[in-house]
Length: 458
Image 1 (cartoon, rainbow, N blue to C red):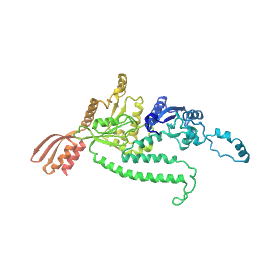
Image 2 (tube, rainbow, N blue to C red):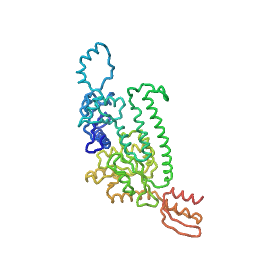
Image 3 (cartoon, helix red, strand yellow):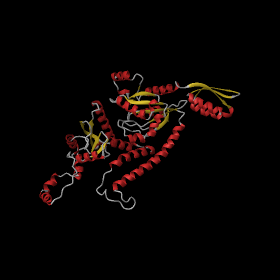
Image 4 (cartoon, rainbow, N blue to C red):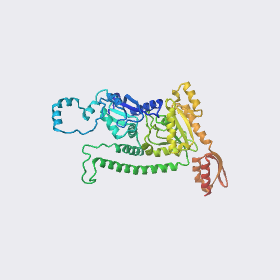
């Protein structure tokens, strides 16, 4: 694939509208798939859709649509039967006499690949469904182009965008899990191997190597996640806000605005795959931590959900969830539903939350009024507006203030070292001294006050 943005390779989309999918949702799914493919570095040259009761077993779509699809790629639109040729003397004689004609008509896999390289022809076919290895192979034979399903596209994007060691390990596990069942039998694949692994076919050996590699990656990932668990445990008594929502909803922009951090902000899907935790700025007493999380998407592969479990744990253990929604996106209601469903699956739906309708600067007055009727308790804002960010920051502080209580702590002179801990986790309203020690009037979460009192009593 060329890196020149002016000469991006072409892709064609394939989607089947099943009976349980509405026209609106189907259109939204195709649009989202187009954005995924664009993020991968391709320009969409066309879309082939079909209404069916189920995916065609051979190649997802029917024969007529397969021919239409092949027009975009330069293929012949026909799936070879794969039947072995019956060799007889008469057939050999006939074939020799007609060899010249057959050479002109025959299209083998090598010619298919050349055909797909024609200017203006799509080099990749992307299917908006999870497909089997045999369906992918049949589509490749019929189109002469590379074939990926939705899961393959997402895994590839994750693979390119992962930055931290943890994210790279998580993505590599998901990628190998995706690749393993799709390994193809090579021409010599059934030959027996010599030496170690004797008796295994080449493809079986490759799959075993992948399983061993996945086991190694999981072991390394477990060690990293143990460190992450220790960090989260150390933050267990602090106020934590988690930004959650659909990919490209503006979470990273809000993260940067609220904390003053230099997290990556990009107008593309899955720009953020690593969990980032920063303190709300300017800092408050007690300090409030804000975490940015990986974005969600419809039909997010289960392997990726499992791989990013530690990232989702930030949402599960947060004190407050901020659901970030791109209000300017026509499908924002469906995107919000996806976010809520994923969080429900991990048990985070019980965490206190607030809805943030981001990018409201792109809305008309009528659109804003309509959203206000649907979501009267939502916060309307733009991550690019400093006034909106100031208002959101105060809302976060006020939300935690409602759960706080005031109490008095007596810190004996023998335990003055605890003063730093008190100032760290509570807001000191008054400070007085007498013969018993330092008397502090504090405001903090009830659990924090109870913990401090227990430490003073020990």
